[in-house]
Image (cartoon, rainbow, N blue to C red; front, side, top):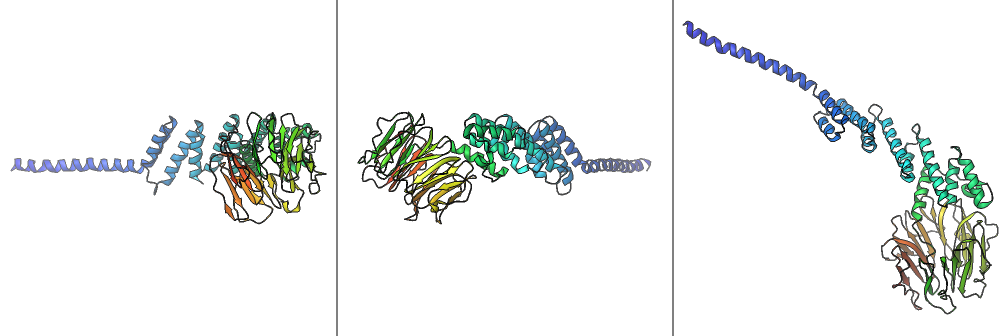
Length: 477
């Protein structure tokens, strides 16, 4: 019996020991599980400290975010902080932004953006830096970084010869460093006056958002080649890269007599005459001179040429405009501070450096601050500093944004932000189907129009009774 009793007691003792061990394991597991989130955060922080960000994020995957969201946010915050310390500002910014109101994540996001902007400024990418900063102008220090970005960009524009853009930007930050003095010097050198407000400001302040859009638009417009093609009544003119001029169509009035022209930098076509601006600032012309529209031989210091049907206009380097031809409807007396001109039919417009539109016909009136404009018979189309297309008349054609605008005859046109051309016929109420390559210039004549693409090809459409659309073999490059 004694032996049997011992046999029965042994399993009971074993069961008791097993129970105790199980209980201990349970308690240990409970403690571990209870602190699992904390352990995951520590592991994630360690991995992030060595730059293993993907592994760090993987460790955080062990946290039940439904019950331990604070631990999860803490872990993400620590990872983003390590990224910031390692100058990985893009990912850090995204994480801080996603954390929203957690701790000081909003401030840390702004700090990341500032750092990114500073790196871009040092690399000379002022447009991208400005775009980043404009959304956090409220945050401490952002305005100073933004102003430094504008300051350096403006100095670069002055070196590149765009004095107006440089002066306007400097005037917009005139309380920063020596921006005011530099703006006055630049305007004085180019106009003979230090009245910056009158020359480039037009009394209308430009917000940081608008200035950024304007800078981006100016940068895109540098790719255009306006003045390289021109459509008259029944002839088309093209300017080759080497400064020679070719033409097709009617030569009844000698308007295609451009074969001997050299060193040409711009062309323009009136009804029956053609005009060329030479590299030395003088002008040549051929064709119909019944109204004196070709009397350009004594002009000097010309920076841009335009034509109406029976008129020629030239913008001089001092910002004034001279004309010849049928001047009864083209009066430019008193125009000063002009930055560009446009003409069509019997109207001429001048765009001041400050974005104001001067016009010879009231139907062309537009109040918006413009960077580009064009005019036809009795209407005008304009481009605002932010790239919006506006009109001096009601029209069913709708374009949101563009880099350039055109008018002529019964048509209006644009080159959009992707450099795709589009032309609308007001009389027929329809859009033309155009080759969708990269367009760099458009000229809208009375009965036909021409589009120049960056590969040098020219597409013409419209009446071709005189061969004015025979440009299929042209290459202006």
